[in-house]
Length: 328
Ligand code: UDP
Image 1: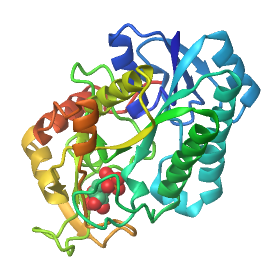
Image 2 (image 1 turned 60 degrees about the horizontal axis):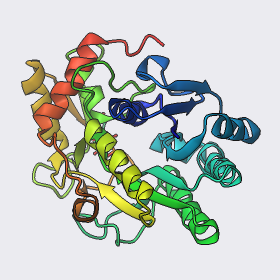
Image 3 (image 1 turned 180 degrees about the horizontal axis):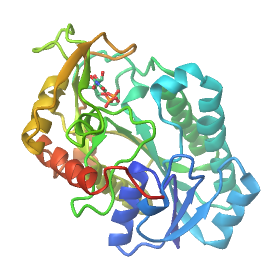
Image 4 (image 1 turned 180 degrees about the vertical axis):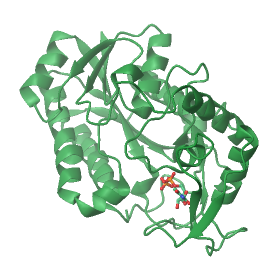
């Protein structure tokens, strides 16, 4: 009995692998290492390869006695997805099709899926709940929605059960500092802000201060990556106990503006962090906040690390110790 973690060398995948190892689970990681890092994987068996290589993938599932899958492997840059949609359909949608077919052939019928708030698009209400309409405004969100829908039809046809977790803004790092966030290129707000006190950039850009929010900057729901990891474990347990397929939002229910996030980073790092207002970034909704009521009532999940200072503090510890990211 082993859990296959696709994309387990990536940011959220590696933190989930750490949580699985903590529970003494048998873990097999599949990652093509395009964005993943070997040093991010704290244990388990690492298999380097691509989901789209179906016969290879089936042999991994068969040879390692895989009983469940947690699926992170995907391209996840919104801007890139708009410029190169084919890459996203190929890697995300076709990659997931290969995974589901390999699972079906090997008799594996439980999967926890890494989804995103980008499946909703412009929110129809705030906080966003799982029953709200899904109208993605970018190719990335559209492909994640297509992956969820594929799972729904595999459940209906073959009884393959899935839990899809729609994350809001993942941030932070393992509190003991062993692993953290290292994207190339980096596009996320908190790691970009922390590059200023690290001396890697001289200011942070604020993408728009004319939104209909209290200070004019966009509001997001930041959630500690270790809280996300915990939710994957609870979802896995639900499936192991014979639970039905479901979709859950994962957020804190609290929103912070870009300016508030910069202020928290100033406080945590003790650096002035100059900020310059720039034009809006295309496709950014003004406010994204999750209602996590469903996951709280059904899985008993709620964020344990919900102070933004603690989230930024963990991120800062990792970046200070690893200013150039992972070695490999
Ligand atoms: N943002 C910003 N400057 C940056 C990067 C991001 O003002 O250099 C803003 C962005 O417009 C959004 C928020 O910070 O409102 C969070 O962006 P991020 O890319 O981290 O996550 P997203 O909400 O797009 O998933």
